[in-house]
Image 1 (cartoon, helix red, strand yellow):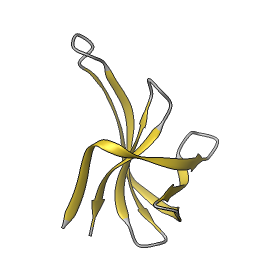
Image 2 (image 1 turned 60 degrees about the vertical axis):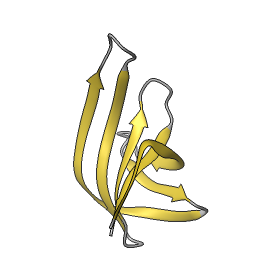
Image 3 (image 1 turned 90 degrees about the vertical axis):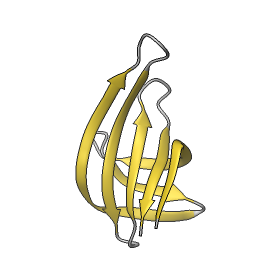
Length: 84
């Protein structure tokens, strides 16, 4: 089953010097990033309400495969999807 939160669930993320996620905290548990499978930017809909985000599909040492994004307009991080 895949869990999807289109608007994202707020999370706390620690990043490295390149602003890449190193670990994140969700539901009170820390999830160290083991590897990043994919990275992309979405910058669109400026005529309706701009969306500008950096997305990361990653896997963690705690066994999660997840999609996180950083909203570049407000600087906050969100969990968008979990795969099982």
